[in-house]
Length: 118
Image 1 (cartoon, one colour):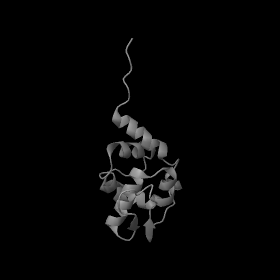
Image 2 (cartoon, one colour; image 1 turned 45 degrees about the vertical axis):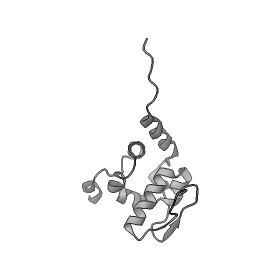
Image 3 (tube, helix red, strand yellow; image 1 turned 90 degrees about the horizontal axis):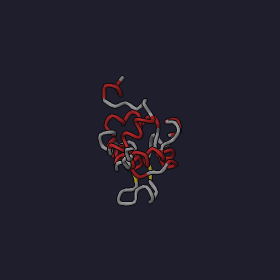
Image 4 (cartoon, helix red, strand yellow; image 1 turned 90 degrees about the vertical axis):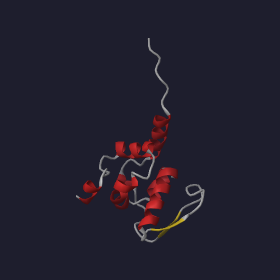
């Protein structure tokens, strides 16, 4: 009889991120333009206001919301089209557990620049 191993830290983190995910990317109806001001529970250490017209600011907003947001925050602050367009780069700026949770649930997320351009 073999004892099952406890889940790794990676598996625990991935599963925590997976619990926050929306059922579909179509639920992501956040703004695609303008300025976004995140609540303190999402942006608890530092910058809270992001301009979507500036690529670096947009990327920083998405990275923060993906890492710190709960399900409703993802739905409120992320836009499906922007997420898909940014994903090939954004996925390199997030943790592996977060990236795996999103890519396992949403195979439509492109994993390289060639896919995103197609």
